[in-house]
Length: 518
Image 1: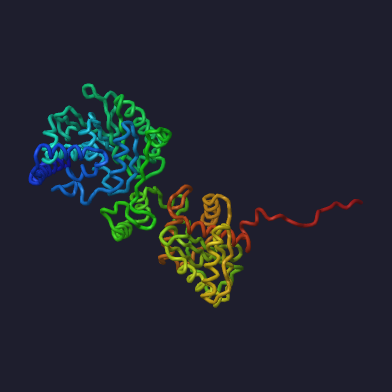
Image 2: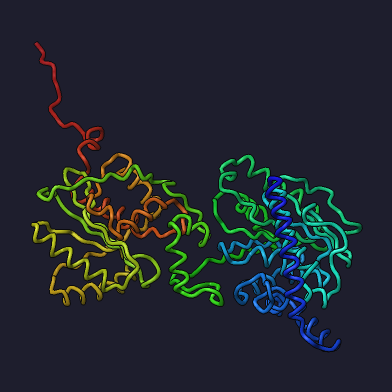
């Protein structure tokens, strides 16, 4: 932090402190001492945590820390924290879920007033960032008149800008960067009994595995071993933005512990319903998703740390204008269907095969109802038939899936007055290995051409997102890569591999050369 930035932060702190003092004083409620004591005891029960937060910091308070009532997960996560004094809780909550303000202010204050916290440590990715985290806590402890009325004057010594302060009831709070030492920290008889490791994950640093391992060892060793004998809560508020980073390291170290708790909260469920429904609507979810590119949205809002082109590179995708007069050796259509409208995508790849080379001619990749997908299927069959091309079509189906989908296909064929119904196709081999092996081959070796007309279509946009974000173990949609792999593999089975691939493996058959005896 530069000197100018530090000065700005100090001025902002002074202004914010004055506002909180004035506004919270004006919102004090009139009550006698018995009523006040009863209210405080009620708010300090762990099952009433979000009422505690709302009363002192929430939407009912002038200059609040929140713009909506608390979420269900704010309550349930804290109840676990309160119940287990040695908890290691990973709060993999989406960006904008109020994970920092609840962890560093709400949880801290509720624990403190229940005598469950005497020495709190806020850890940021660096010292300056940690001090900013500490400033939110000090501002309310020092100037929130609602809080002061119920629990007395708070701050006795120190300032967030120095990285630490003490309170009148003998509690200490300090701020440190992840790169600063944790060993030997003590305040009188107390060692650290609460730590918030806030937003310490960094995508760039995570690529340095040596540094990542050092940070993980520091957290799981230096920090945890510095905890109090009878209490030591470690909360990690950080959404899951990178694989093999600090979060994965902490999880690996503590996953077998009975005190480990991993709480994943995404922006919405698969059907677009907001997780924090008290604050967001389905329309809000659509707007948020539309403002961010797919890969950033998956990392920041859905705890799915995918990287564009992690396995399949964008420059591997070969676009060409496919001649209308091209006569194919055969054509395959393959469907990957889903049971729900807003769950997985319904995806289809129509692939033409010529001399073993693949041509992606048409694409369907939508979250839609089954009839919409089937209507598109039969309209495509008619269109290709007019061009003199007969398509051999399949759909991905186990025996159970075939029992569900076959009646729908038959009904659609009767409705469309078209006799050709896709054949069920199912393979039991590992899906991710199939996709990686087959598509790496055809993409890298330029054996799959994508018709140029698809490039700017909505279906191809979604299909290409799934291709470029695909990697083993991903939680991202992989319906299109799956159906494309099936189409390519079936195309090779029925209509052969490319000539260039056959040269090295094709056996030579001929007459044996003999020597004539004289």
